[in-house]
Length: 324
Image (cartoon, rainbow, N blue to C red; front, side):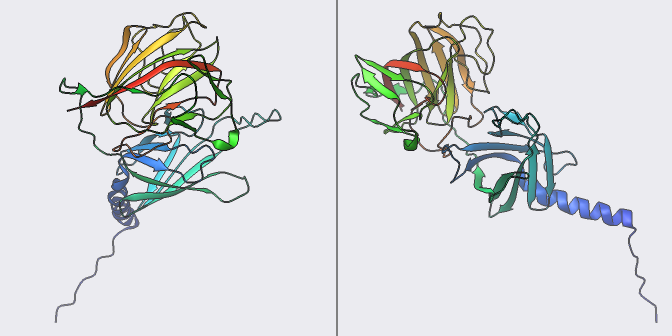
């Protein structure tokens, strides 16, 4: 009777087999994710992108870890159905502390969704829970086939009718008088009651030097407003698609003067005309920005006006839905 031989793999072969299995399982993390955070203090949504999850060196980008930027992920580990990533930014806590914090994000892939937590290492209290769904493919493009519908006056020139506070607990700070909508700064963002999909948005704005505001398209994609006349364009300049698309030129007027935005959004394509100068032409928006509060990218969303930074004034806010 011939004996059956049993070959025991070497530790190195076992390691390769385990690694291959782990990488194959981890590949489900690849792609872009829209994230809902039910108890996020300001009601904001997050965005995550993972690449190379089935490789030895995965990478990614994240909004918002800190400073509202599109942050390259500093630390990342993927094992089977578990993703862990983190950052070590300088502390901004009061009291002069200038050490580093360790921000830790962990998620499990289950049923095609990410179920995760966030915590600052060493801080007391339970972690913040969050859920991520795959960012949708949006097929609408600015191909010349869209026509204007009926224009909607979003601001009646005399009241806050049609708007609500994103964070009611922050109280007032917005006022309407003589056709001008004003924010004193450091108050809640203002959000339209009505929601829109593809549209043309016109508004006029005025900010003092050094101030900071923005316009949220579908409450997902921020067009930056800043008292930065004369500064070279970057991803944080006036007219930028915040942290994502740089304006082609500086089209700002001197701080304290009235300026205009004419913004066309179709699907993920945005065109921004500032003071009658096109500064972004059919730019492709990859995903949410730090001002986002509505992560449901395949659905209509409101217009939001940023008030939680500096003082700003708006007037003549109109929106024209675009339809086929």
